[in-house]
Amino acid sequence: MRTLVVSDIHSNIVALEAAVADAERAGGVDGVWCLGDVVGYGPEPLACVARLRQLNATVICGNHDAAAVGRLDLAWFNAYAAEACRWTQAQLTPEVHAYLADLPERTVAGPFTLVHGMPREPLTGYLVSIGQAQDAWYETGAAAIMVGHTHVPFVCTEDGGMERPGPGGLRATLGSGHLLLNPGSVGQPRDGDPRAAYAVYDDVTGVVQLHRVWYDIPATQRRMTEVGLPEPLISRLSVGR
Ligand code: ZN
Image (tube, rainbow, N blue to C red):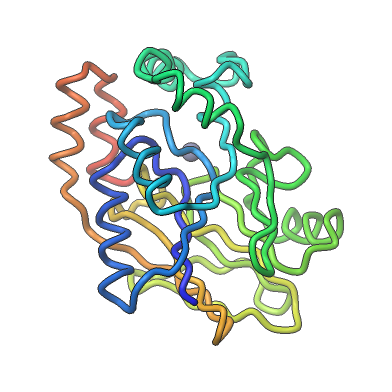
C-alpha cells in the first residue's frame, strides 16, 4: 500500500492537487496522511478540507488549524499570519469549523506516530535538530515519527543524523533503527525550493521517498490577490521562503 504524506498545505489547493496527481502517476495512492496546517496563509481553505475528506485522509491538527477555530491564541502569530487567520475564520462553514475543531493533536498511523510540531509541544514546537529527534524517540517510545510545521523537509536517523533532501528528493527506509522525518510543506515551502513537497510511504518495502513537484504558483498567487491576502505571503511562494 502506498500512502501519500502531506503537511502544511495552507489552503493551497493547486499545490495539493499537483502532489496528489504526481503521486498517482508514480504508482497510485491507497491512503493519505496529513500532518496538519490544512488551512492558514492561502486562498482555498474549504477546497483543501473538502479534498482531504474526499481522499478519506488521516489528518492531525496544526497550529493554523487550531487558531482558525479558536483552539490557539492568535498571539502566537506574526501580523501577516494573524491577518490570514482572521480571513480564514471568516470563510469557514459551520461544518468545516467542526471538522477542524475535532482534529486530534497526534495519532498513530501504521508504524508512525504523527504530530504537527513535536511530541512535547504538538502544535507549536519546532523540531529542527537531531537532538530534538532523539528526545522525541525517547519521550514517546515510538521508533518512527513524522512531523511538519517547519516547512523544511528532512530525515533523521540514529546513524545518519539529520539529512536534507537534494533537488531529486531523499529516500529513507524503515528498519530496526529509529526514524523521524518531515515531508516538507505542500503549500508554502521554506527551504528555498518553491516546488510543493510531499512524501510517499510504501508499507511493503518500508521506504519513505521525499518528493518535489512543480505546481502553478501564479494561479495560487492570483487567487490570493483576488481575496486580498497580505502581499508578503503571496510573493514568498515564488522563492520558497
Ligand atoms: Zn505550517
